[in-house]
Figure (cartoon, rainbow, N blue to C red):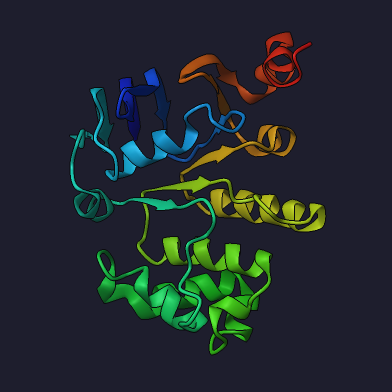
Amino acid sequence: MLEVSALKAGYGQVEVLRGIDLSVGAGEIVAVLGSNGVGKTTLNSVISGTISPRAGKVVFAGRDLTGASSASIVQAGLIQVPEGRKIFPNLNVRENLELGSYRRARKNRAANLERVYEAFPRLKERRGQPAGTLSGGEQQMLAIGRGMMAEPLLLILDEPSLGLSPLLVEEMFTLIGKLNEAGMTIMLVEQNVVQSLEIASRVYIIENGVVTLSGRAEDVAGDPELKRAYLGL
């Protein structure tokens, strides 16, 4: 569904991505793991069209979207839930969700709203509440729900566990697994190695702008290179 080939990008004189290759197949959860500053958010930004690549290709659902506008990428069904949630705090829960269908799937807004409420019952309970008054976990549910409103063919989740308590992190990964079981293709970009490996089918480890380790989640979990990359062992 998504093919990224020899992707390079950066800021000014600094090259952040130095030739990234990765793919996501229909129905998969693919985890892209790495510490802070290795290029994960830059990768998401290039795929989503908010940063132009310097080299390489991004092909989605058979279409070359390299350098395409973010609006056309959303229209194609590639939806990102950004790091830090980026909700509209002064709008209520329902209004935030409805904005998710502004560019895509507007005609199905009512049906998709019910689908989100079914996945996240707490959002239905709080649908009239200002989004800025929600807990951190509820705000993350809202951000994911807003992405679901666009009927994504592929949903990119950027650090969904960031800033959550251990209990909420567990709950969040369970919800992500359930979304995938219901048929959603997910690219999970995370620092949380252990729980990402538990739900992903395949994994890419990024260090210094390149993929240093990839494969099936169960194989990567047992690879000594993983400990070296994260623990220096």
